Structures are given as C-alpha cells and as structure tokens.
Image (cartoon, rainbow, N blue to C red; front, side):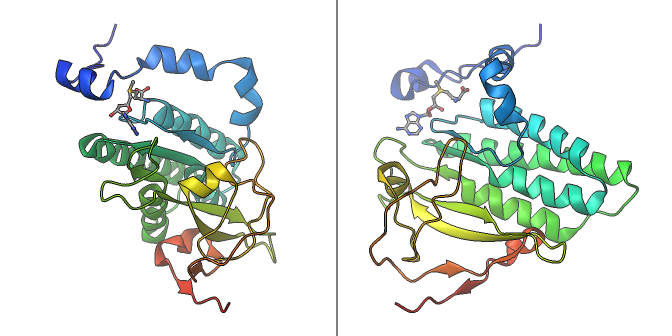
Length: 238
Ligand SMILES: C[S@@+](CC[C@H](N)C(=O)[O-])C[C@H]1O[C@@H](n2cnc3c(N)ncnc32)[C@H](O)[C@@H]1O
C-alpha cells in the first residue's frame, strides 16, 4: 500500500480537525451509484467546503478531465471542455499552506491531462488556455472560513458563477458573475446588481429564484472560454 500523509501534526488535528481522507476512501465515495450521472456531466458543480489539500476536488478533476478527453473531437474542443470542468469545481480551505498545495495540485492535474490531449491530437499547447485555467482555479479555490463565510481579512468570500451562454456560430462563450458565499447559501445577490440566472442545475450552487437588490456595479464581459484570463470588466449602469 502507498504511504499517505493523512496528518501533518497533532496540533493541527486539535486546532483544525485536519485529517485528510485516504485516496481509497475518496474513490469509494465517488464511485457511489448516486454520483454516476453527475460525474457524466462536465458542468455538474461540486463544492468541497473544508477542502484541505483537495482530496475530493483533485479526484473529481481527474475523472471529469478524462470524460472531457473522451467527449472531445479535437484539441480545440478539449480545451473548451477542460475549462468548463475547472469552472465546475469549488473549494474553501482555512489554512494558507493547504490552499497553496490545493491550487498547485489542481493546476498540475490540469496540465497533465492537457499534455495528454496535445499528444492525442498532435497539436500545440496554448498560453491562453493555461492562463485561463489558472484564473479559474484562483477564483474557485478560496482561502477562508467556511462557517463565518469570510476570508482571512474578514471580508466576504466571493465565488464566481461561470454561466455557459448559447453557442453562436460554433462559438461557446461564458458569462462570469460574482456572488458572496453568504448570498449563494441564503438565496442570491450577484455583485453586479443584476438578476441571477436561476438556471444552474445539479447541486444548484447558483440556483437563485429571487429578484435582487442593487449591488456594487461589477460585471465581467462575456468571452470565449480560453479568454477568461483577460478578466475584462464592464461597468453596469443602475
Ligand atoms: C478533516 S480535514 C478534510 C480535508 C479534505 N476535505 C479531505 O477530505 O482530505 C478538514 C479541513 O478543513 C479545514 N478547516 C477547518 N475549519 C475550517 C473552516 N472553518 N473553514 C474552512 N476550512 C476549515 C482544515 O484546515 C482541514 O484542512
């Protein structure tokens, strides 16, 4: 059996309940029949609220990127599908060093599968694809307190919804909208003050129903999945 470091120190176990889940258990849990359908959909959202070093998120990422590889017809479609996969995985972790490992692992796995896809379709890697992947990981893996719903400096944890827009002329665009974790849990106020989509299904992470009040005027421009890294904003008039 491969050695796994499931505990870093007794102090950390006492202070933060930090005991990582063994890979074997993670796999068994994700093999449950109830999850088969969700794992066969690239955009099904998952949130690990006490993520540690990403025991579940990293295995979910592997499984979803394998699926993306099988569903894609060429390198371009794989690149778009892989960004969709990344945008579906969210994590919160209290401790800085764990978040660093988590982010690094997510990016490493993304890169490994991207490399396989490049070889499979005999193509070339794109800087835009890698940068957009990193932008999504940084937005979706948050350091903070999942109970208080705040970051280290006490400000609200903010997550992005990556809403896929209808494909026009073969081009898939995405609309990024930010929400506080508090509003996600309590029913929805996007930070750009617009009406939430209410269309995200599966775990319903961003599935709000209510009309919303005004909020800060921030909105990301809709863009191609591989242009996410540009993080272009537009002003929204109230
Ligand atoms: C039992 S470990 C589980 C880690 C990971 N989910 C796994 O299965 O390996 C719990 C993790 O939650 C983190 N944690 C503790 N309190 C937290 C809080 N209030 N908000 C977010 N993370 C927290 C700890 O630092 C630790 O990494």
